[in-house]
Amino acid sequence: MKLLTGKTALITGANRGIGKSIALKLAANGANIAFSDIACNDDTIQLENEIQALGVKAKGYASDASSFSSSEELISKVVSDFTTIDILVNNAGITRDNLLLRMSETDWDRVINVNLKSVYNLTKAIQKVMIQQRFGSIINMSSVVGIEGNGGQSNYAASKAGIIGFTKSMAQELGSRNIRCNAIAPGFIATEMTAKIPQAARDKWIQDIPLKRPGTPDDVANLALFLASDLSSYITGQAITVCGGLHT
Image (cartoon, rainbow, N blue to C red; front, side):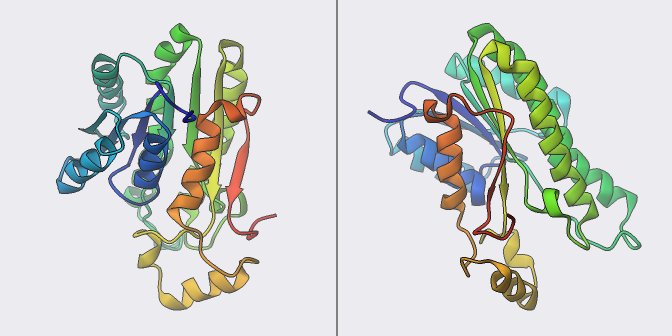
């Protein structure tokens, strides 16, 4: 028996990287998949086809996770198309790295809005659906940087730290409705985003990792599957790192 047969998951920022891996992992375990990104493109069509080949329903949506009205509209469309939403993965995120001395207000606001406000937007919009069905698993994508900080990433660190506090608060607010809320805090994961980091910096990160390798999107997706399924039915309010021992 697959772990998520008959369930529906919504994943934001899923056209590539960690979001795409989570979508495919949940689909392989029986979940129907709704996913969103800022725009629909060839990646969207390709992912729809890959998910459907696993024998489940899939549909991609263009939605701005940093906009509350767009998020409300997305939830409404997904419920109309899939009837329910059992799992929400808040994965939308960007970086605009710089020392605070040189960081523009625009870059600060954009990272906070896309990374942190999006989690508020989608969680608030989906509450009524999950409360009515008295079931749900909300998974928020944080980062080890949100726990430890990182020079040149004050905006990113603040957004990811905020996600952890938000997650713990939602676990307390929604637990009595049988809705769980947890955060995943990846460390150095090999994605398109981390590929933009200079090679010297990447080498230093890997040297500091006890397992001596970067993580893969699939490493993160495995934890997302666990948190989405009933295997974690008594786990809520947690921020779990996937970092090869970088943070202990």
